[in-house]
Image (tube, rainbow, N blue to C red; front, side, top):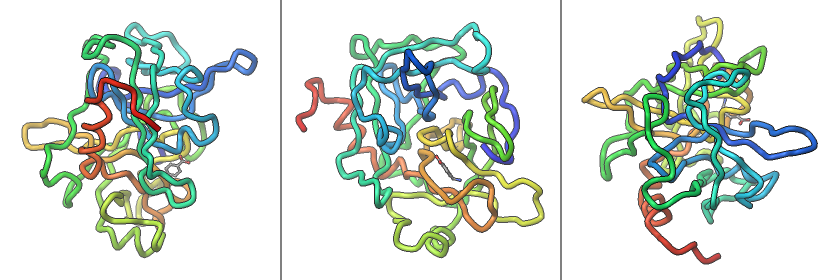
Length: 254
Ligand code: 4AZ
């Protein structure tokens, strides 16, 4: 997160991190992810481009805050299955969505506590992802200077699609992507997601103070550059897909 600040422990209980298992080089953090119910996390498809979607190669951390310390509520879990969106193509960055199923009986893979809880999905047909809204992004990805060890957060306004179209052209597809970031040039540091944050949440606060998972951190051009907003997968667009994958008991056929 560029232009952000330290979160408070327990403030973003759906924030998870995806790690590559490596005995020789040590486990290494790859991406953020968001817990959407007791058994499933939403993340970005591009997190699996390098090392594939074999679940046994990865682990998921929940309830984490400081990656350098053992936190009381921190848990390491094993994915059972990874479902990358079938229309995802590395060249286009469209449909940058993947679901991670945790091991465990349906409905009870992890127990919730004040440090581990699911984010709400947008209600079907709701106005989520429509402006104006100010939303929060969170992650352990790069700041402008370092790899932070504590979970950072920052506010980012949703921008009109033309702002991203102007910068990214046809690569930005308005119906399934969201454009967000600060465009004000008087700020010293611009609020943005950065390398290592992808797959993590963009949440927006609804009427009852409820946080809704509105975007998945996806791509951009550098970090914190006021001329280049961040691009997010538009969660509301993927509700039928999420429903279909998470409600099918049998593994999907490929
Ligand atoms: C990345 O490399 C990345 N500023 C994610 C988001 C953005 C840039 C890069 C948006 O994962």
